[in-house]
Each structure stands twice: as C-alpha cells, then as structure tokens.
Length: 561
Image (cartoon, rainbow, N blue to C red; front, top):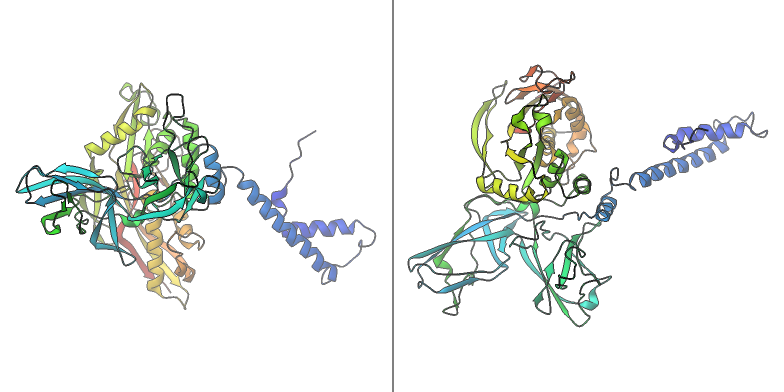
C-alpha cells in the first residue's frame, strides 16, 4: 500500500470552497442547491477562510521547526543554540591609536586606566560624536624627556557602567540587559567588550559553561554574555559553576556600540579627554596639551548583529565541520565567522585543476574580502574606468594581502585544517558593474526620489556581506529584486520603488572580462564565450577569486514616456 502524504500545502481558500460544496452536494438536502448568492455561501467562505489561515500557520510552524528552513529570527536563534552555536550581536570596530607625549621626565611610570574614553571629533552618527575606548589598562614608562610614543588598542563604543545589581536580581541565573552593546566574537584577545565584576572582583567570560570543565580546571567564577532570540543582551551564570549570591553586588562595564556605523578612517581618533594619562611616579595626571593621539589606519571588524541567514549558515557550517576544515564550505563558514571578513571562498585541486596537476595537490586556495579595505587587511590601489556611456570614475584594485593579516588568518585556521594541506591566498579580483536604466514612473512620484531609491537598493544588493565569490550573476533576477517592494534593507524600505511604472536595463558595463555560464561542464567551467558588457540580460559566472561590486556613481537613468 503506498504511503499517504497529506496534501496540506494545496488546501487554499478556493480549494476548500470547492471541497465543501462537493461534500454538501453528496447529501440529499443540498444535492440541487444553488450556492451562488445564497446565505450558506457566506458560511462556506468563512469556513474556507479559517481553513486557509490554518494552512498558512501550519506551514509556518513546520517551516520553523528545522534550522535549514526557519525564517523567524527567534526560532533560528533557538535552534542554532541547540546545536552549540551562539549567535552574535553587534560587533564594535577596533583599531590602534598612536599616542605621543611631549616632555616629561624620563623613567616616570605612566598609566592609562582601562575603559578610558576618547573621541573622533570630526565623525558623528545621528548627531552624536563617535567614541572609542581602551578596555584594558596600559602601563609603561616615559622613554625620553623630549617625547615618548607608544600604541594602544582601542575599540568603538561609549563606555557604560551598569551597577546596583545583586544576585537577587538574577532570574534563572540570568541578568537581562538593554540592547546595543558590543558582543565581541573573540574571547581570547586582550580587548574585551564587557567586564563583569562581583563584589569588585572581575569574573571570566567563557563561550560554553561546559567547555574546560575538568578535574584540572578550578576557575568557576565565570559567565556568558549572549545575544538571545529576542535581540537582547544577557549575562548568564550557571549553577554548575558559581552564581553570585543575593548579598553580592554585580557591576557590568560595556560598550554601547554603533556596529558598522562606528567605523572611522585614519587620523580620526584625536579627541583626548581630561585626566587621560596618569603619572604614577608623580601621582598626577598629565596635561592634555602635552598629549597628541591619532590612528594611522582605519578601524576594522565592525558588524551588525547576525541576520537569520548568517546564523543559519554559520551554525550549520560549524555543525557539519565538527571543528575541522575539510571541504570548501567548512573553510567558508569558519572564515565568515570572523568580524574582519565580509566574504570568503576556499577551493582546491579538483576545482582548480580537475585534470590532475600535481602542482595543486593538497593546496587550498583562499580569497577574502575584508570588512574594511586598508593597509592592515588588503592593500589596494586605484584605477580609472570609463563605461560605455563615458561615465569615468576610480575603482579599487586589490594588490596584496597585508602580511600581518595573512599571518593572523593562517593562525586562525591552523587548528582546524587537515595536516597535509597548505594555503595559498589569492588576491581577490573585483568585478565592477555599471547600469543604465530606462524608467517610466507614476505621475504622483518624483523621478529623483525613484532614482535615489533604485541606486540605494543596488548599493545594498552589492554590499560585500550580501554577495559571494564565484557567483552566478543573473540580470533578470537583479531587475526583479529592484521591482520587488518586499525586498528592503534593515535601514531603508525604498518606498519610492512603488512609483515605478516600468523599469528596463538599457545597458550594462563591466570593468573587466567575465564569462558566460558554461552548461557543457567543460574545464574551466566559467571560461566560455567572453562577456565584455554587451547589452544581453543573460547569466554570467564569476571566477573563483572574482567578486562582484557596484561602481560608485555609474548608475544612470533615462526617463521614458
């Protein structure tokens, strides 16, 4: 007997109306009844409407039972934590500030207390000056009576101290905090984003209450800082370790982070507060006029809280990899978990040379797009690109990986990689696209506003965190995305898209040669007929180290009647 599978997916309003009528017609009372315009037709439609709602909620419930299909953040967060992945909240930008002290007495001991605040006077967000802080104490000595220069690590955020809590405020060993605090996905560095003290004694932050729990491990004053399913921050304790008692005071220092909006360029962190550097030898603060400070490179590593898709992909990637990088997906998931990596791809000998070149044996190719392009991550230069319609601009050309960053990435993946493999870091090739649109608008909308929303929507579409290496580019899909009013970003609803009566892509230009998608499964599979910007809305395939970008200022429009 074949397996009977309920077809609840097809039980919509019209189907239910038809089924109810057919069922009634099988009875003697309603066999010849004319339902059109009758009172019972209203009852039939009401039952069908309730049935369709039940179908919708049944599908929604079934879909959000499994991590692979869930689309509600609350469920995705909960399911990810069940398999051992902790979703990340807002990540603060970080960088290095160089401080120079003029004068002073050589040999004097100086100190910058932890959680000291500094500012970026020329950078604001929502009319508030962007602030940075050192979250660990700096101690040193004046090396010269003329001037002393040294570096400190800083991260973005306004220092907030939450006090007045005791152990009696804990609910199920948890303390709920307001949102917006820097999460920090690296608990082993020297630049924490949170400090929890119990009776003025700092406790240790860990990622798992049962990690490092053994007969040899004696530290039980620990806590977890998590981003929960309701987008809230929580400090958690565990009864298997130590929990603050009702008489113990809990003090929490955090960074109120702006996430990606808190990133600043070079020479931005220059605002020095009063009483910033303390001269321990002389028991006095240095005069601020003798101190100068600046950052030589842009800050990096900022990110918004993880989206539904990011939580799902990272959780599944971590579960499948079992803390080992074996496949390209394992590498991608591991690298994308870093806050300073916006996109990554890893591929090996079978993709690079399926014919069996011995030069590719055990080699893992890796290409990375950093969150922030700088001399600290990927070094770039500029190049002039003129489109087919004579729009000229400067595009960014990656030239090399920063040695320190490449070394840091290598150390990061070293514990997870196979013993026989080694990495080759391939510099990404940025493929810039330009678009010329033809628009017909509705009369009540302004053309300039529609153009602005189309441009902003394209910018969001081509944001590095939304695109992938080796991507198939389908221009018809891009057009559908632009016209879909339900496709919005976290910060913009693109309301003027509704004013588009007709939208056509009149011309496309690409900064370099890419290729049509090869359906013949030949090697290499993306190098068939070259595509150089012809006006054909066909799919193209990028190479392994090629990454799509939108050329700044090269989206143009023609109003059509």
